[in-house]
Image 1 (cartoon, rainbow, N blue to C red):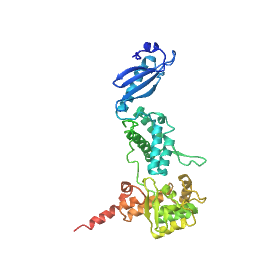
Image 2 (spheres, rainbow, N blue to C red):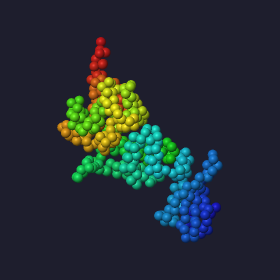
Image 3 (cartoon, rainbow, N blue to C red):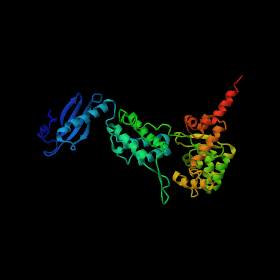
Image 4 (cartoon, one colour):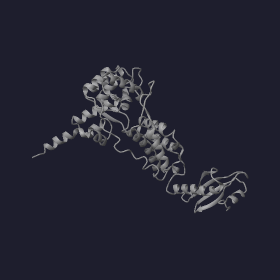
Length: 391
């Protein structure tokens, strides 16, 4: 076995396609391939799997950015890192952060539907794929890489009014940073579970969510304000807002409903997969069922149940400006969004005494989320119930 640890020895090697090997441990070898007399050579790691009785190789590169006397040690360190990775059960395939993100999006699309996958993919395209972290291989990912990515994410300004002649920017909110970090953390955890990387030390701490970032949603609109906002909106926007005020769905979930989602005979609305990750059915009261029956009249099953005037489905970009205009025309505070309708209806349900489990099932969220944001509203109900127990 030729010596490849010394510069002079490597320079004296005869050029050939087959690598020259240096044993690091049982079944683990570091190889050096020299194709031409003037070549600086490239390095290879080779591991033997006794279970399959097969050799697995991985190219390590040339390390020509280092002085010649440092290349052996650098190649040895990289090879040993790879050997440790596969020794812990990691896969022999190498994934970059971007590839891990893409794999996760495909998983979410198959498991939770297009809406959830599209939301996560949009976050990756904006914050991950364009960042240097995207091309880092998972076994090489270090905490400093993730720390740098998080700093870039936090300091990126948000354009408040992108369609204006004079767009303004603001700092990103902690809750927005948390949502984008959650997507990347989920993708990396998924890759970890699949064996693409054998430990999560690189991101476990840097991607922890910011505490107390999710403040209570205070943009509450009473029935009079909601009615005024609907009345000031264009007809198609008004119908969309009315739908949100009748059934506490996420705006995106309401926009994705088709005529086929509503069973007129049973008065049942079937909500497809959204962030809750599963279909669910909502039995509607007669007046609400009549509202959706009127919307469905004369439309094909695949048509949007609450579509725009041109027949297309609503999107966040499509409803954002007209909803803001309707709120302004109704004299409502700045910052009122389509989501305010959902928040307001949930608030009324909780304050009206409906149990939190049922409230959570209607909008397709968790009981813990309802308790966190709305639990304070039924504190009085609990006190009244306890008072009845007094003897």
